[in-house]
Length: 304
Image 1 (cartoon, helix red, strand yellow):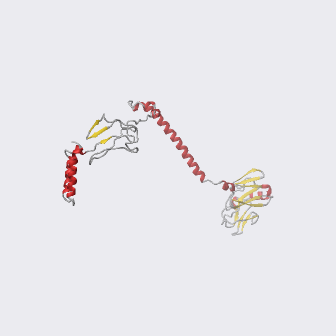
Image 2 (tube, rainbow, N blue to C red; image 1 turned 120 degrees about the vertical axis):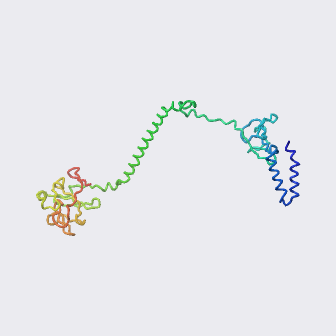
Image 3 (cartoon, rainbow, N blue to C red; image 1 turned 180 degrees about the vertical axis):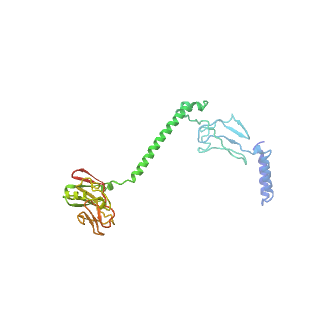
């Protein structure tokens, strides 16, 4: 039975549809009959007849007729390729012939695809697919250990760099470090005089003591002092007394070469300090602070 033998059936359906202009009764019944016929004995003749054709790729196998579930080779049809279908099939897609109410489909025969070979990138121990993996575990384990060790070294170095950069960011900058020290020429300070310098925003007293002042301060008893401290513990060179000029009471700036003991006097509340910067009288509880300093040579002192 060919598709052409169904033409009377199709003409009959069209005539019934013209007679039943409202389409309320006959046409739905005929649609049900058509659906039953396609699912019954007429289904093999109502399915699509599709040809595997050449698309915009390379040449395919000879023409194949798909009818039902069987695939037959039609030896009378020419080979379907780009050259034989030139001018007949579209250049940008497939060509398909189907029957009435049939579903269309296209099959491309990808017979020219080559699977890439990655043998050059694989280790010789694992190229044989029939070889057990435990036979090559030693070489693979050595590589894993090497990779893990290298990763650990790089990670530790990166962590060390990050921590170093973080700690360095919290340290003082170059301009702050430059202000943290002051170098003073001692030859500019005459004996028995005191000079005031600005250091870290505070007054710095540098006193060139005479031999009489050195002997007087060294003879002071610790029992007389509110904040007991030997004179030799407050100086490196007995000739030079270096203290911060801030009163330990309320932070005022004392006056040098003044007071009852000839050292420093704070006029704000009447604190008296001796020539070693020790509190002798008044409300101040502690001696004047002695900063860190050193003598690079006999004529220079660096404070800070």
